[in-house]
Amino acid sequence: MSCTYKKYIIIQVFFILLYQTSISQVLDYSTKIKINGNRKTTERYYTIRINDKSDNWLSKVSVNHSLFQKFTLLKASIINNKGDVVRRIKKKDISSRNSRSNGTFHEDELVKEFDLHWNEYPYTIEYSYKLVEKKFIYVVNWYPAVYTTVATLNSSLDIEIPINYDVNINSDVFFDFKETVDSDFRKLKWKSTFFKVAKEEIFSLNKEEYIPSVKVIPLEFKYGVKGNTGSWKSFGNWQSKLNNETDLLPLSEQVIVDDLTKGITDKEEIIKILYYYLQDNTKYINVSIDFGGLKSYPASYVCKNKYGDCKALTTYMKAMLKHVGIESFYTKIKAGGNVADINIKFPSQQFNHIILNIPIVKDTIWLENTSKYNPYNYLGTFTQDRLSLSVKENNSKLIRTPKMKLEDVRVEHNYNFKLNETGEGNVSSTNLLKGESFENYRYYKNATSKEIQEEKIISDHEINGLKLTSWNILDINRDNNYLEINFKGTCDSQFRNISNLKIIKPIGIDIPDLEEPKERIHPVRISFPINISNYIVYDLSFLNRYDVQLPKNIEIDSKYGSYKANYKLEEDKIIVKESFVLYSGEYSLDQYKGLYSFISDIKLKKKNSTIILNNKK
Image 1 (cartoon, rainbow, N blue to C red):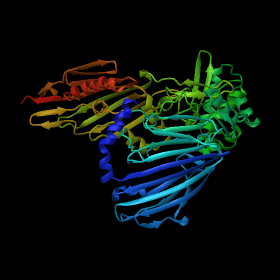
Image 2 (image 1 turned 180 degrees about the horizontal axis):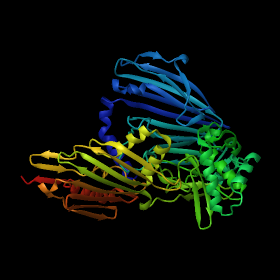
Image 3 (image 1 turned 90 degrees about the horizontal axis):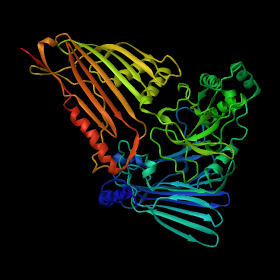
Image 4 (image 1 turned 180 degrees about the vertical axis):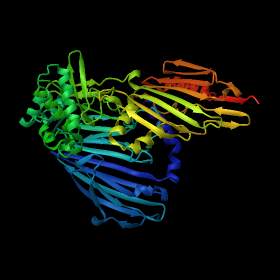
């Protein structure tokens, strides 16, 4: 048992009495699954105790299911504190809607909703439902907690499968497990007696990696076409067959591509031209309505509609490249800022996004086809440094996307303050942004109003009383992986007055707040590095009337990163230079002590970073 699970057990034992007496909780959560022929039946049962008005959100039930799943409500009732059933949900009380998210045109996710609210506390709600489906790629992906913020006291998973139905199982040792076999069926049961998800921590692993789970997939399945999860190669073959002939370009589009690339022989230049064409003439809209969103719409769909989801747009780009004789590969990836690692020993659908990789001589081009604003061959923080499945018939394999380096995330802020003796005056600033900041501001520049952009600039630069008189976002070349923000404005309250003293607290770089080692539960993952610098000039024409006390310079270097701060007086100017670097990496709880010490040392020394002006009078 890992150290993380041991800590969970300690937490569970410590808090169990508390949760049994005063806090709302899931008393029981059970899931029963039966595979019979090509049919999967899933039944879920919930019993939830609601002890306080603030927890009434637990009574609002939403059940997500797909078009391919037949939904049946088995029971939904309210039980008062005396144990009496005071209300039962009827069919007319259930509403149904499409689970349409932002950027979605069509989606195959439906939502059934009903409310089990009662006005007398405490009360208990019970509900259960059944889902029947014939198209599935997972038997189950099960977690023992219903909510991440509410304790689940008892949970269980029961699976019944035919004797000859082969499955792959990935299960944590956290559970009590029992298996029985009769003449026709194999019965598997997992139980958890108490479970509450620990609080989130900065630079923590993704919840998927530390919440115990049970994942069961069929070895052989049919989902659109027959598939096999015996290896990544066989799983990739299934995806390749599912998408067969979707990358065929209609004749009308072939003419356009031929015209765009006429006379050009450089392969990379052709790729870039076609990528620009994709960005300028299509838009991203989620249209996941076929085979659970795992099969791509054909390139012809995008040609006709000028929109598509990540699968369709990637297939369209692949089709254009195929037409000009450039081979590229449909690539399944898990996108997001902090995502769980791919379990390489469990070939299966672990992905949520599609990109394209194009091998060229001594390199690979990576294309994010859903973004109208990404530079060419730029993945960024959304998909950098993670395993992806490059799909090719009979040769699918896991490959890693490029990792962002320090230079790729560099952020430079330059401020020039010209202030009077009351701390009011003018400020001008130039800012170079790369990495996540660049990605955010390129989106703001291209997809939001000037008013929103101005608000964003003001909120991101914590300058007292800042009012902009002019500003711009310089984004000259679409393929630059950086942009500049320049602004001028007025400000006030830059000094704090104490008797004859004026205190200046320079704009500082935010340093992460870390939990003390004794409180830390999870290992650390810093997905991409941090590289920030500030250069500040305080132009103070009255400075000759004051004695100036500057903080001591700081220089801290460690294997986790570095921090430097330098303070200098030049005639009537005070100059502050500050920089902070934090390397990407993964650290165990033992190594965390060193990281915590590094960050704590910075924070301690930064406390003495105030500049003091003492009036000579």
